[in-house]
Length: 160
Image (cartoon, rainbow, N blue to C red; front, side, top):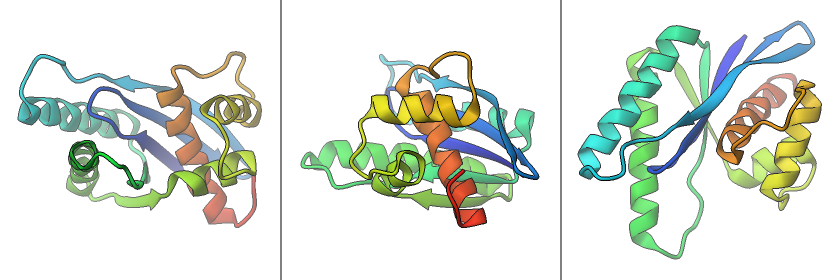
């Protein structure tokens, strides 16, 4: 099974592609999508959608795992994050992929064992679980890998 995880954002969206074969999970690739900063919101969303679509075509995942929205005090920021998530979900839907959503606390609990873990703790555990030589960075990318790992953990019902 191949999963692509997304940590959505309008400034930086992390992505991570994981493949599970039998009991082995490996990172195929990870990185970030950075929409241009000095363009209108629709153009940023178009860029995010276009890049996500390219990744889906290149890596041919079986499913998308994406971080769900969480409560924010700033309504405007929450709306923008929701729009970024929508662009990613649309890219998945247009590729006829299932899109699974996971709350940030659930992702942290699944990967670190603590729903209140820091980004650095998540980054460290992702490196350990996937046996990467270096810490996956930036943290947007390691978060995306963690979201993918969370999805795989849900499938097998145990932590990796």
